[in-house]
Image (cartoon, each protein chain N blue to C red):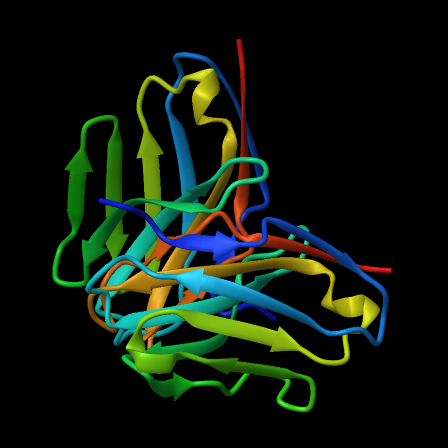
Length: 113
Length: 109
């Protein structure tokens, strides 16, 4: 079974630029998560989708971050404009149900300079 | 502060047992999880326990749950150098996964 796929693996941008990350979840998984992991901390939930609907986006900085999950499969997370404090690893995860164990991709390491 | 609390660091010798502890806050959490993260990698689901269980054993891993104290522990028997990683405890709160800051386990030969 293929795991959660994310791209790119690494990205370096200047502050105020835009960036987008892509995630392809495990086939059949209805729930998709985007987490932000700052160095030395645990993952923090940014947004959670159930199929193509948003379940929780309470911690998403909506003035600069946006995410969509078209057709309930792939998802993209965008940051516009980026700030230095957005430097982190962005992890995508998926699960069969809301309360099931989530399976994570390798993450995208973003460096904002 | 963090809702899920973990000690930050644990050092053991190869062959010893490791015990990583976690306290959580939501008594209604249905599942509690342990994840492992190696350098530069994503999180790997190690094991989980349903809230109506006290203990779960999976090969070298034993999970103990004390619901009264909201305390979760992960015991790794016969710890190997390949077990060196950061271990995260996570709880389901309002249908989302909430993580602690992680415990760095260092296994020395």
